[in-house]
Image (cartoon, rainbow, N blue to C red; front, side):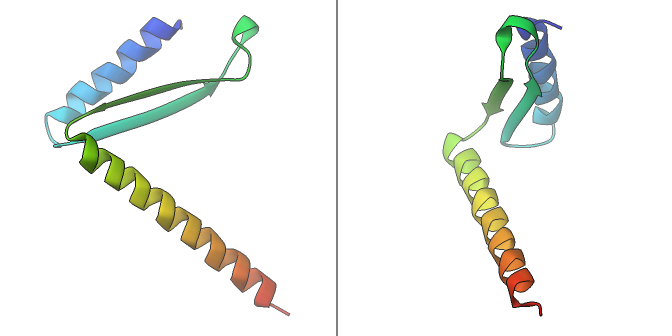
Length: 78
């Protein structure tokens, strides 16, 4: 699948979700093949940018805190 087709697929998902939600931010990645090398990513969102940014930032902060707590618990174990 070429990059344009991948973007179209993600756009379709955004359109379908947009019928039910006020804001949407989709982040996808895949391993690149051939001359692309590395990782290919697509990031598409709709709706209030500040709401999408805030939700993504909150998710990152909570995930980092969970990881810190898990590491702390593991280091506290005998």
